[in-house]
Image (cartoon, rainbow, N blue to C red; front, top):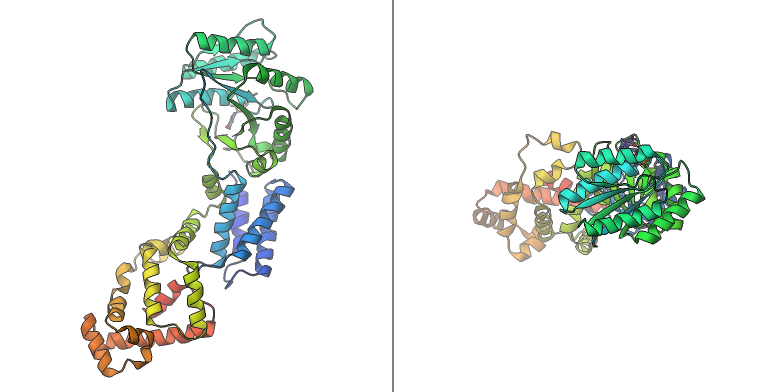
Length: 440
Ligand code: GDP
């Protein structure tokens, strides 16, 4: 699922690799590529444009955090926007009512009948519901039989009225029947057509009016891409449905429907069908779907951790200090604390793709900074702010106080001095992880 899109996006982000910061130019280049990837995945043209415009504004308006690289930041921004595009939060289904009524709509072959069975099964086991399935497809006897077979498999009764050609009547009678027989959930499967036609729309509209469902769901085959979005729009204009069910996501779908529907019809995707079997049904979680599309969940959580740990204002102050060559051992200590706040350093580093394997056998952990911290802690405040005054006798005192040796103190001061020079030269703040490595 979405493999092609995932690969294409990954390639787009590579354009930012090695870039020191996010600029108008490199963002434009990357996003042009992202847009092309989205269009190739059959995402609606307007949706793709709006998407990349938003990402651009966010990327340019945000300072790149010290601990992450521009391409990583971009992955995170795109991830968050993809999540938004698909609705942000996971949408709930309303099953309150005595009975609660759920009405299915959609074209023939979209997966309505299968979904009706899957949903009955799910709500029966997860929410202890007593469902009744209703067969309203009076045109295709085979559809009624199909629902009966499904009902038997999941042990849910199916309401049918042989000979009755009026689906509105059947649906209304079914609800009556459900009330009398203590069913608390009625799932009404309706007739579809191969394409949208007036008669079908009139019929489903009439059923909706008659049964006043808690939820009207529009079921659509994800494989049909842009067509799925257009059909969704037509159904929504007539039915004002409550949510979308995307079926056949297990197939070779390019992703266009999943990414465009929400924006075009402003209704959430509530469920996704992921197979022909009756347990192949999931709630739709936008953030998890974005993870899958990007296939870079690791980077996203890395950036999230860094964002939590690092106060951006503080980072800006620091940058100013470095530019003025005022970066001192106190700031350095604060940087160490921040890195430590991010959690186990090895864990953190191993989240970076490719690095995990490399550092597997290397011993870096939070203790890596212990000696450095002890040395800095043994200095006076004035010494930390003015390392240049630390002479021989001060070094001896610091070594003693920190339980280290004069050589270790010397080494730290020398490395600190080198780093400061290097940072000054680079003017802009370098990745503190890298800086730490050089200090060791
Ligand atoms: P309806 O005409 O809308 O009621 O559609 P059906 O429920 O009869 O489904 C049409 C076909 O799609 C059937 O062969 C189903 O087995 C298949 N189908 C439904 N949902 C899924 C799904 O999530 N994944 C896959 N692979 N097939 C599905």
